Image (cartoon, rainbow over all chains, first blue to last red):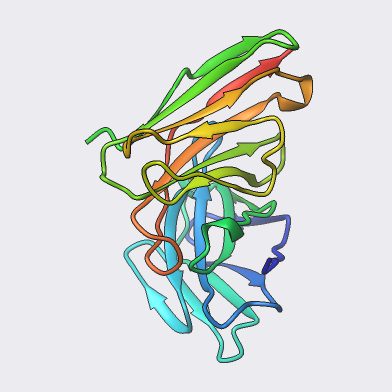
Length: 110
Length: 114
C-alpha cells in the first residue's frame, strides 16, 4: 500500500494562504493524489484530485512535482470555516488500497 | 437527490448483540465502501463492493460482514458486537475507482458497544 505522511496539525490566520504538504515516497505509477476535507461529526468531502503538475478548482489548488513523491494542497485566503481535518490519499484503480491516514488538523484563527 | 444516507445515526449495543447498518445511495454508483473512524484517527476501510452482488475485504474486515443485494444498498453486519467495535462508521460510494473516483460519504453512524 502506498503510504502518505502529513503534518499532524497546522495553524493559520484568516485571509492567509495555507499550504499542506503530503509525502508519498512509494507512490505507484497508476496512483492519483486525492485530498478530502472532514468537519467534526461529518463524513469526508472530496476537495481535489491530480496526477502531476498543477490542478486548480474553485476551492483549492494541488501541486505535484515531476517525481510525484510529494504533493501540496493550497487553500487561498482561508476563513474560519476552513478549520477541518485534511486527508491526502494516493489512490489507484484498486478500491482495496484506500488508506486515509491520520490527516492534518488545520485550525484557522481570527 | 439525497446522496448517501445511513441508518441508524446512533446505536448502543451490549457485548454479544448483533446489528445491521444500512447504507443507501441514489447516484447509481457502482462502488460502495464501509469505513470505521476511531477518535483522533483516520478512516480505515472495512469492506467494499465493486458492484451489485460483489463484496471484498478491506483493511480491517474481522468481525464484520457485508452484503450488496441491490446496487443502491450496502449493508454492514456485526454478528457479535465487541467493545473494540465502538466507533463511527461511514459509508461512501463512488462511480469509479482510481482516477475520477470521488467518494461521496454519508453522515455516519455512531456505535457504542458496552
